[in-house]
Length: 485
Image (tube, rainbow, N blue to C red; front, side, top):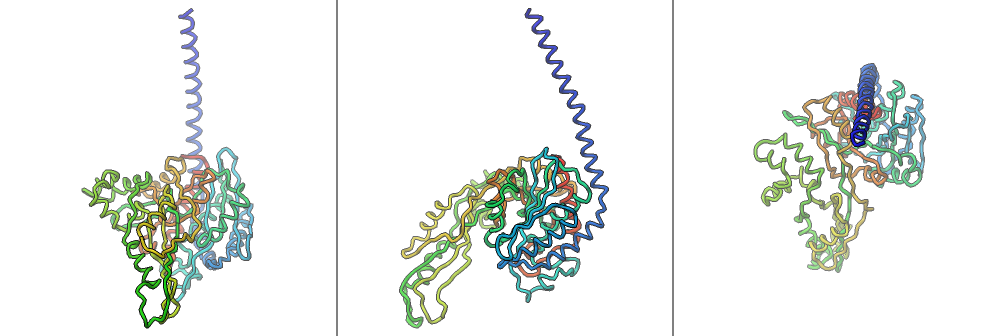
């Protein structure tokens, strides 16, 4: 009986093995066929026509003035409405205040995979035209670059995402997941656009698996590989007002313990203070990746950054480098000083605003207690003046992250791809609590000089990067929509 039992068990194992082999034999050609089909679709696209259209529409979009405040994003939503209607893509404008609106569009897939959201914001910061080579809302092309407020933050990515949707519709791209385009209002000031969507229509995005938005940066350095940053986390703004009170009087009679003097004494240790180092896993991975750009001792230190930071001298040197300080510390920047409106009046109140950015996982109340201890002055009030959102992050161990890496390396085999912690805020923080994996990535490569024009004069984007970017982003979305890892 024992022998018969073993024989039957062996037969069952062999049958299971044959079934598994049959599945593999069937599945591998299907996967290969799917990749071949995607490759054929991509190669069949008339890219020159779409690239020309991208450049023209980018110029048109930059001419829509959405300076915030006041925003006027309704005009941008109407721009997208016309664009998507022309491609036959279902879309909706969601007005929520005078002149303000969000815009939503969807291309339905077969539902076998959860949706991918392409998120962008339509508002831009204000621009003073007197320092611009071309007017900030002209969309003029000068020297092969398109000038306009929002050219890099982030009307470029919004327009590229819209073009990807249009091309996918026109080319009948097969989709295993819904593609959702969401353009929001008020990101630059109060996030009321995303807040309104999440409060009133969370069903539009609740079931998404992935979201792609701003937050990565791809910088060209002469003689070195291009660094492609994929944003996986952001620091959280925690703005604090420091207020001093004291006896006021005439400016001709100094008061040693005046409010402005007390404020300056309170701030002196703050500007010299650096909160303790905290190494996040994504930051450790970032240093490991960029070690390829270094040589000798520095390369070894970056490869094992956790051990290297145990050396006080190395930790001090790295913390004094503004390219790395924000990755390792909560940061404090003194941005506003306010006292009297008149030079000959000593005010009884003076205040300063601190732009504080906290690392994911840090407690704002604990930070506030640390700051009070650093100030150690009487008659000083500390008051948070911004709404605080707990910082969060997304894992790099996903199929979509690997897809981004794969497409980058197809276009740039020597590229250095690394997860990045953004010092600035992105709307990803608002969508991750829904269970959506969010990444910051734009298929645009710029120099440091060009990157510095964001929120500054002469913001612009090279025409060739728009042409390159629409093709690269479409390939990424096409492969992600097809379920390729």
